[in-house]
Image 1 (cartoon, rainbow, N blue to C red):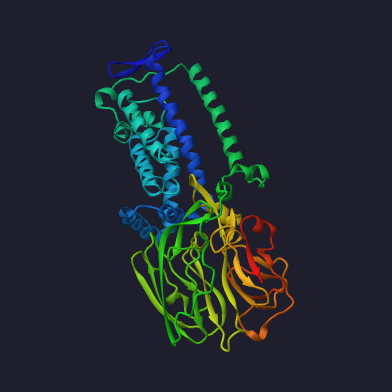
Image 2: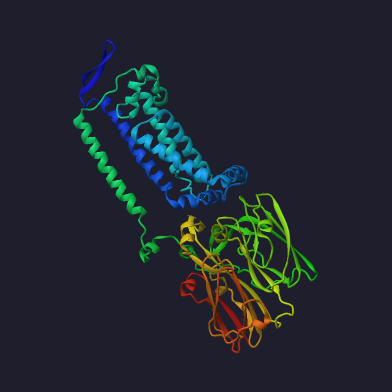
Length: 531
């Protein structure tokens, strides 16, 4: 082994056996640093993908959900800082991760890079992985970002004990510019003065070849992991879905689907809606960490009469900005539907000029995330003159759940499924199969009215009652536009349609989304029609 000693101020080389432990510690530490650099390079590469930029705020918003109240200030601070400056933060993140990756790979400015990398990792942990956020991997696991912090601490300890390393650009920069050591070295001056041991070139060559082979293997694995593969039954079966976790017993209590009475009979009615985080049941025994209006999914049904002025007070008690968008309103959205910060309210009024059944929902970007997390409901506007009187009236809001397992039967949002429009459940009034287990009541020969809204957020509905033909379909709330002789009628996401049934024979009639996949995923209930 060749080592160096200092003779008359000039570094000279001397032999040292390569089996000496000190000889291997320095290159081993450098190899750990380089492999860690590969990990950071993979992370950096992901930040340069287009979906990283488009979902940057969504990642932070999703991380904020489900946090304890005493931490709301922390996530509110970051959301308010990032939202108006998202482009800057996207490029800052890309630049920092790329710089850290290159510096680790080549051993450049190690002293400052270890501090910057550890600080960034700790920030990522504190805004995404820690405190029980949705990217946390479990209470018994530290999470990748905190592991990164520990690796940086380990590299600092090794560098402080071993001093300079010839397997870095820092070593050669220090030889030309001694002041560079202030950016590179953690060791005290007496250890920096040591001549670092170096492996023979033959052993270095073998180590480099082994490292290159490992990099090629990792690159191939990473490419395979990023490859877009079509979904297969085997892949789908590997995922945990809420229906696979559902209890065999029916849900204990179904949501009351009856049309509530009018909010008032005077010319003005007041609507108070509160955005809040809540855990809701989406299948028997399976819960979801939702964003809601009023603590339920869908939100409360609002019932008004055509021509009434609807005076709305919307209060945000959630963890992030929310808003409300009424499809029944004709009003400037930048004024009425504006963002509302946590703890604040907005008030506006609109005249319910158009009859029918309409969706209301959160309109805060990304709207897909806010709606798919449960922020939607229905408003019924009775026409004037009214529709023929009904003996039983029900409101059904169709929605989609896109889930990932938190632990046990507790689920949370899955953004990738939302973007791909591949829901785990498609449901009426928030919970799969609840009206199969708790049918809606009707009588033979009586008029049953169904106010059906497809809240989506993404998939259309083909509404159908098995064994029945609608006596009237009101696609726009105008009684003069009623359709007859219809068995199945399409409803687009964001649309509402009113259906009348007069069933001549007693029995149990299934109402479904006639997309058979939707029916299998929960969009099925029963009308129990008795004599």
